[in-house]
Length: 415
Image (cartoon, rainbow, N blue to C red; front, side, top):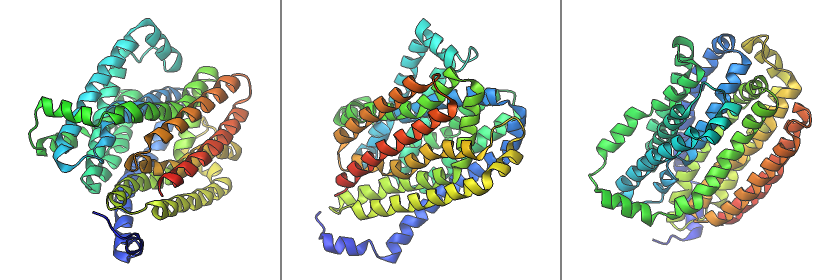
């Protein structure tokens, strides 16, 4: 159906529709905020139970989990938003099946001498192939379930997932003997009941239908998977290189501070990204332009990031020192250096959905390859050869340049 663009633009200004978008964002952010508040409340205990070096090992493992969240389903989770209602069941099952295949493949790799050696250097000897395979399967199911909630417009369920994962991790890290890494897996496993509920509610489908749907949407694993993998690796590279070339303690300080100082902005970016994907998909399917909506969301995030940076400079150093204790690094310069790159990424990355709904995956792929090469080059050339602070400054500059180009491409795609 074709809709007159003038009328469509005017319709976006209807208060009821804007309130609907804001309500969806608030629902997602609310669930994430509850989980983060529980994590924040648990942080003083966790920071005193575990040393920064132990937290650094957990951070390296979490970075691997975050890669699996993005790629374990071979991007069939992203295809859910592009599929019609008749294909939803087949695509959801294809995503879960892909997670199982990914788990088996990474088990074989990490069982090999090369994979075991890499794990030992980045995390430590106590993480083996079984842990990594379990992470791939669990994180894949978590992401497929999250995407299914978005596809159905069930943002309440998505909010529940966003609250359950960090809350489960925090409780397990304090109250159980399984440590930070085991608690990490348990947190992602909290999505299993909802995954079972979604699976039971789908109409029955055959293995042949799943295979046919997977083939019909093959552009997602062929085109979207490489770019998503490069993006996830680019985010994990700082943690892995810091742990390898500096120390697990530096990696622990980096991730702990990043998590705390950027938490408000990350919550906002997460909510905007999920709602933007849904809303942009609706606009494009109705024949409308998503550019005005996209620019408005990015502007809100940049204003929020600037306000948060001022607060970090003025107040966060003594607050974090009180929260974490004496073993953690909390000086203002370090806080701002850690915040800068994630602030840039959080303000721009939520509009990634426009490349999916506008079928501009090739342009996104080219940018992602360039971004990955730039990030790898920065860390290969500087990690271990310059001070930790200079490395973080160079990384922040790299993020600013690369994501300025990304925002330009997204703006062109939203026309």
